[in-house]
Image (cartoon, rainbow, N blue to C red; front, side):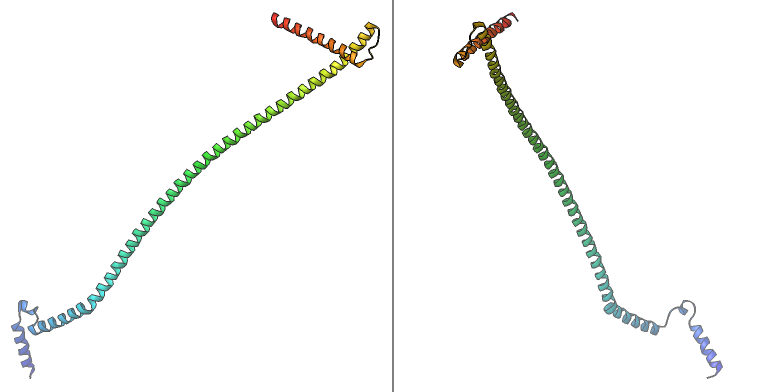
Length: 195
């Protein structure tokens, strides 16, 4: 073929396709393009899409599992916080009860010691009273003896004879002291009537 013939063919081909026809492919090209597209679509649908779906499902399960775990953790934290608050409230209640019991025990101990102190004070006062009474009686006996001796000496000087007999001496002393006590009683009665 000559150059002329090929130029004529090119011209003929150019004359056949003009305008929008230049952009449209040949029907054979369309058919084979469609076959390749269907093959790629089938391969994608059969092999690639299930793997991508599995990966996406696995990720969504992980995300949902993570959300569920987060909700469980939040619920557990809320439960722990409520338990902690309940324990704290119980501890406060126990502490208040213990303080009240300690106060009551303290009051009971103070009252018990007060009663013991009063009993001890009463016992000491009673012992002191007994001791005072014993000392008073001892002083009275001593005084009676001394007064008796003085009275005996005085009576001996007045009577002019010595009272050697102890029985007679004791009678004289007793009579003298009885007279002295009678005089004191009469004087005290007069003072109380006048006062």
